[in-house]
Length: 95
Image (cartoon, rainbow, N blue to C red; front, side, top):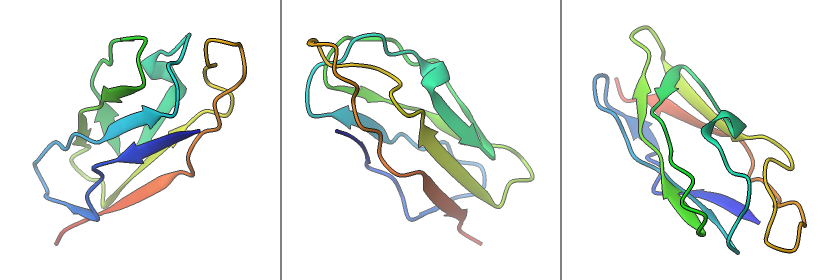
């Protein structure tokens, strides 16, 4: 199973935030294109091959919310089993 952690409930207008994507096991085949971000830009994320990676997301200038999602079966554990993605997250702009 995969999760998003350290995700703010609200975000500031011009501030990037750094949630963590964590899995219960090491994963294989991860790349940042498997994470979709609407309303913001995801900075490059290296494949460390371990259980977690830190994401940096910057809000698009006109966005009032950011949605993050991980593609279904985006990557696998070392045995080749698909890792279950978390539900999509929506973070609102702190006005």
